[in-house]
Image 1: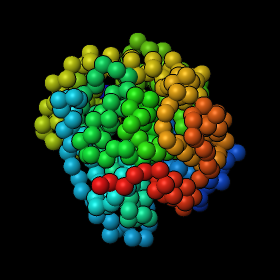
Image 2: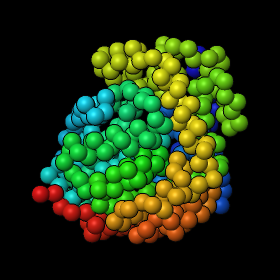
Image 3: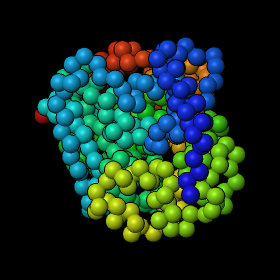
Image 4: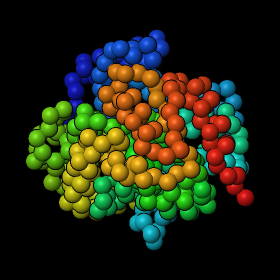
Length: 360
């Protein structure tokens, strides 16, 4: 039932990704658009995720010296009664005194992006680096809610910060994770000491492609322009959904309780969430930041915001022009080019340390 690429295409995509990774050409291909089908390499990724130098930094990152010695605590944090969901959380340097919450990009989770969090923690033992699986991803529970996905995630994050007792905290958001963090910033600025966006998603191309890659691909009534639907027939049950790549992977890694929760969910709730979330991205296609109106962006009241970009103009999902425009709208914001881990750490650690109060 799953609409997968032929094996030869999968192998070709994997080979291209491997060659680029080994040669370092994620950074060197700044003037070329190399459209790697990353959703076939890993189901939590969207197409084109490896088209920039951030891919090997964030996803399944190679450990830096000392990373193997970083302590990690895993927790299941129940957000009830405010939010009917439990999130999987990993805390690196649990005794650190400066909180930094990392929200992964794509449909990413701690299994793919935890290595980056560990590397940041290794670079600065004072940082208490927290990374988590958003609802419906990784080892967190399923709950599709009634609002667009990034809104549900932003509201979850507000309660998570309260449960962990880390407000005001620094936030690091990657692409879709940054969108969730922006919702939090617009609604609960008191939760945030410093906001890092790395990178910012925006523009009509990103709106068209990501609305389909994340959401509309599940809706048979939607005419798609950038990809095919996940199945040749409409999805009418949770059993149908369970056979698709992303959800099959989710079910295979989770407990029987979480699988039962998935299968007892109303498929109409899922389909409504896909419609609302995809439409939300489409409605903001001409705004600076995908998922947020420019007036909302300009109204943000965060003490300090840092926008990082890998400096590659070929990334049409995270255009440099949108990052630059965001700095003209967001008060107390700045932008830096930081294409690789050393440059990211050089920008991130002093910024977070300067603006984030130590935990008592």
